Amino acid sequence: MPEAGGMNVHPAARTGTALLGVVGALVLAGCSGAADADTTKPDPSPLSTDATAPYADGTYTAEGSYRTPETVETIEVTLTIADDTVTGVEVTGDPLAPESKNYQGQFIAGISDVVVGKKLDDLQVDRVAGSSLTSGGFDQAVVKIKDEAAAAAE
Image (cartoon, helix red, strand yellow):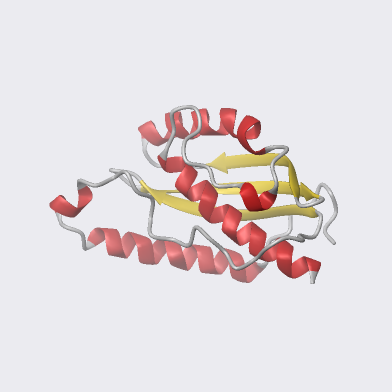
């Protein structure tokens, strides 16, 4: 079981996330201008998981990415879980576009009120403090965290 303050990220998860980001960028590079007009949906990524409670208590970190009109942005999500419930959340980003910095900041400022105290299986965020695209990256990271926490409980 990971220590309460430690982060638990498998090196293969980081590599897989990096490869996913590269593939996503290549896919976006091949899109025509007409395809770029629909920016309301996050990158096509798994937003559900086969993992179900129980989850191992601990602190877990994963990355998620999402598409904006200008870039593909990535955020890092750290969730602390106790008794299958989120007891703490931290989101960090390194936005590429100036507009993304504002939206990520709004999301980060409001996410704790939305997820802390909720069951991990009930998390799926669609809009936080006016930011809707960042939530796609958040939900993507939560899927990875659920898988890791479920595997740790076995």
